[in-house]
Length: 421
Image (cartoon, rainbow, N blue to C red; front, side):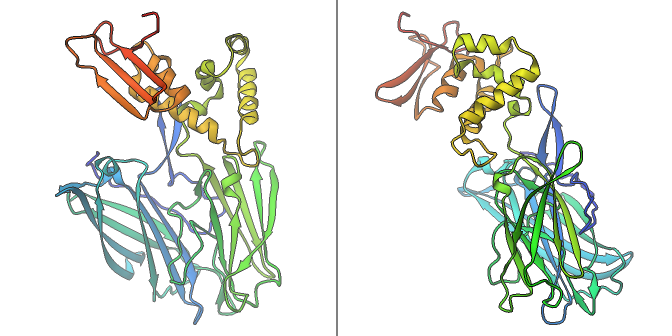
C-alpha cells in the first residue's frame, strides 16, 4: 500500500469537444520497455445540468479515489479508511459555494485496501449556485484530506454553465454508468473524456421540449488512423421524462466497440452538441499491447510445426496471424472483446508475476505452462519446506488430474515431475 498522498492539480473545461483525456489516464513503462495505459489514481468529473423548475444550474460531481493511495488502518477484523472533502466553487477569488463531505470506508479484505484497480466512487449533487456570467469560466476545487495519514491532495476542474436560449438551457452530453433512478443524482462516470473498454454506458442529454425535435437522434463516429470519421450508428433517444420532451437517454454500444477515439453528436433544431471520448482497456494484459510479442506464449496452443513456421515470419505477418487466430476462437464474434484470449493472457500475466526467474519469464516455466493450459488449480498441496524428501508441490484439479512439481536443486525452481522420473 502506498501511504504517500500526492498533491495532484488538474484542470479541464466541460463540454469541450477537443479536450484531451490526459487527466483520466497515466502511462507507465512496463518491465519490457513499452508504455501501458492505467487510470489516474484520482478522477474527477463535473457535469453541469439544469433544474426543471426554473432552469438554474445543477452540478453533478463524480469523484473516484484509488484504494492504493488511501491509508487503511486495521480495526478489529476489518480495515478502515476515512477522508474529508472540502468543495469550493469560485470565480477568481470570489467564492460562490462551499461544502464539506465526510467519507468512511470499511473492508474485510486486506488485498482490497492496496488495490490499484479498486476505486472509491463518490457522487455529489450541488444546487443553488448562482453563476453571474454564463460566458465566464468557473473553478470547482476539491481538497481531499486523508484522516489517517493527514495527507492532502487538491483536484481542480474548470467548468462552464450550459448555454442559455430564451431563458432556457440545454445540458451538455454526459456518460452514465447505469440508468438513473428517481433521485436527483446522476450515476456519472468519474472520468471526463475516457470510458473503459468492454463496459456498458448510457448517454444523457437534457433539453427543453421546445428545443428538441420530435425524434431526437445521436450519431456515433469512430476516428480512423487517417483522422477521417466513420459513422458507427445513429440511434434514437429514449425519453425518461413524463412530458417526453425534456430528459433523453440512449444506450451506447461501448461494450462491443474496439479501443480508439470516438465522437458523439446530438442535434436539435437550434443546438448542436459534440463530445469526444476514448475507449481504453485499462486492464489489458501486458502482452496484448504487442501481438507479435504475445505470440511467443502460444507455443502451448498450436502444433510445434505451425509455431515454428509462424515464428519465422515478419512482425507484421505474425501480428496478422495472431489476430486471425483469436478471431476464429472468439466465443462472441459480434463484439470486439474476446473472452478466451483475455483469460489466456490474464494467465500469462499471473504466471509472470508468480514464477518469473532471472533467466525465464513465468509463462516459460513448468508451473507457468500448466497454469496457461489448465488455469489455477483448485487446491495446492504445499511441501516446499520438506526436509525428509525433495521439496515438492502438488497442483490438484480433480481426482484424475494432478501435477507434481519438485525442487531438485533446493533453489526454489520447481519443475514438473514426469512419469519416468
